[in-house]
Length: 385
Image (tube, rainbow, N blue to C red; front, top):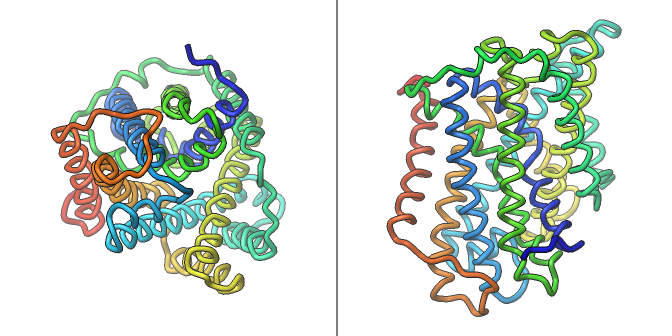
C-alpha cells in the first residue's frame, strides 16, 4: 500500500508544478481544431508515453550515484554528443516557451487594460518582458520554494473556471472526430507534458523514501492528464470552433466580462510563473554548468527570446507546438537511449526497475522522430496541418 508521506506529496507536487503550466492554455485550441474525440485520444496516448518517459528517466536517476540534471545524465551515458543534444533541446524549448509566453501575455494584458490605457498586444508584451527581465536580473524569484502553494492555486483556479463554465457546455461540441487531424495537437500536448527536469529534484525530496519515486511519478503524471482532459472538455464544450489559441479570451467572450477578467488574471499568473521558473533555470544553467558570469547569463537568457519576438513571431500555439515537437522529441529519444545504457552502465541498484523491451524502445524512438520530422516539414511548408 502506498501511503503519501510529506516527502512523497512534495515530490508529486514538484512534478505536477513542472508539468502543468501555461502550456495548458494551448490545449483546447488544438483539440477544437482536430475534433474533441481526436484530441482526447491524443491527450491519453501522449500522456501515457510521457509517463513512461518519466519512469524511464526515474530509473536512470536511481541507477546513478550522485546528483545530476538532464544534461549531466546525458553526458554520463551518451557522451559529449548526448550532452550537446540535450543542451540544445533544453535551450530550444525554454527559449520557445519564453517567446510564446511573451506573445500571449501581451494579448491577456491588452484585453484587461487597453480599454483604460490604450496600447496594443505588442506594447503589452514588451512591458511584460521588461518586467520579467528586471526580476531575473535582480534575482527576485518570487516563486522560489513555493511549488506546493503554486500547484494548489493553479489547480484551484482551473477547478473554479471549470465549475463556472460547466453549465454552459454544449455536448454537440464534443462529438467531432477527424482522424486526418490526428497529429495536429501533437506538439502542443507534448509540450504540456514535459516535466523531465523535475525528476532529479523529486529523488532528492524523497530522501530515504526513494522507493516511492515510481508511484510518485505515476501520480504526478496522471493528475495533469486528467486535468488536461477536463479543462479541454469544458473549454471546447463551451466555445466549440470559436476556441481561441489561449483558451481564456474565447471563454470570456462566451461567458461574459466576469469570466474574461477572472480567466485573464489566471492566464497572466500562469504565464508569469512559467516564465520565471524557466528563465531562472536557464540563467542558473549558464552560470553553474558553463561558468558564465551573472550579467552575461542574464543577457543570454533574456536577449534571445526578445530578438525572436521582435523578428515577428506572433503565434502562441505554433511556437509551443514547434518547441514541444522538436525539443520534446529530442529529449524523449535521449531518455530512451539513456535508459538502455543505464541498465548496463549504472553504478547503483535502483529502487525500481522497468523491464527493457527493444520493440517498445524502437516504437518510442520512431514516434519522436516522426513527430520532429512532421513538425519541421510543416514549418517549411512542405505539408499542411
